[in-house]
Picture (cartoon, rainbow, N blue to C red):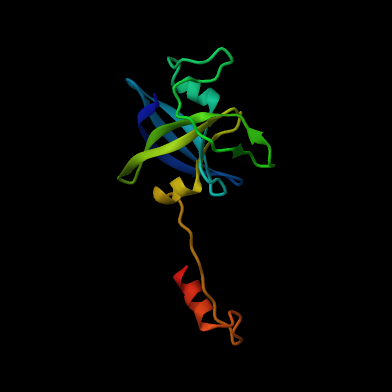
Length: 155
């Protein structure tokens, strides 16, 4: 059994000096609960702290050691900033909506006290961030060949 939350709406995006945060609403049954998420362009996926998961889904069963049951299994290793490995319970899907675009995204439920993380692939897909590349010209040919130039332009 895999938990699928009906919908998650991005209400606002705010920025502080050190991080970009989004306020999302997660539909849980008959109500919507607000969740503050960090936009992390260095993260390869989305991460949901287990305590936040349990707050949003208090009716979900847990094992005797407190691990939530009903999550999809995952072999992914989640590594925190600094390199230490986080305990990973599995994944759930949350439907994210932003700017008229809505679809489900996987979230890894982990044992951490950190914020809910929305990683780069989801941020790009929802158009929360864009990547901008610039090309410059120089008198000398730093690329060396026409093929290298074509590859750079293609990227």
